[in-house]
Length: 437
Image (cartoon, rainbow, N blue to C red; front, side, top):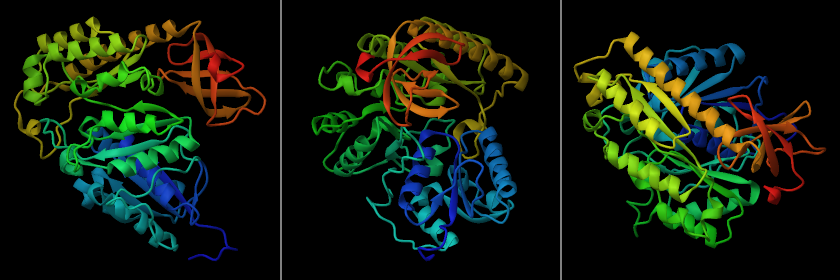
């Protein structure tokens, strides 16, 4: 281990893809706290960890590009390729410049030891919880930390490679999840609960637990932070929480509910657990229980066999629902999945046109959502303060910018009145206190 009088080795963390990937990177930072220094943007690192996504071919390309960039930006650094892409194609990543180790998503707990070895520091790891690593307590990483409480997936959506990369569903033990929530809630104004299949939390625990139980218990024990649920399946939204006057104030007014398609025929081929009408009812009920909430969705376009009628069914369903934005993904065949072998490939030019239409619809919805915030007082977590301007995220998932008050600090919870927007983010005026929002 480096002597205390010597500078600590610097470690850079790059997280690509979903919030689970970011949560994994945060956990690495926390486990290494006190033994290494986490490099900031522009600082040269001794070790670089790239958590690589493989959800699409574009994600694969982005991961390879990130590793090559790390080799250029950090000459001589030892690179650790980790995450889902590392699990499925370790040979590809091992051959890239600067890569000293490849650790797949199923061995995520080994990343800390690998980094410690490459950095030349002690490798003791705290927090165990059966390989879950440390709680992400390093504030320098995020002002709204991600807490991974579930990993893996037992669903078998025909297009999705994630179960192959991360394995079956498993949950952070209930008491440990509560402990970590309390720790994070003491240090942060918001905590984001995340998982590959968040709604499956606790199903395999003994005794069996649920996401609803976890949230209720966290609030009952005095959770100080507001809670945001990351992507959750539409039929698994804990609706009773949204109507509970004791719990609802702790939850952010934001739900992300994957859709993928508005065509029942394609939903069946995708092996999704609902049809268009079931999705419609789930979204409308969530909107009824969370008035004014931000509701988002994933949409997959260009799935094998998708016709113009299927695409129009998706457009019609989205237009009929109070969705605020879409995450649009062109279909990408993933080796080892059922959909990769399906006939009826949609021409790339057609996919681009359909994706562009969905993105344009999303942009219209987002502008309308931001317009609805005009004149409202909102509660914001301060995330960036630079050149006299502060920026942060509201409970409703909107970004807001305002003239920073003297001494404005990252991580603080403030009140801001929205005065306008540019179609992407809001502009506002700082209020005297958070409760004014």
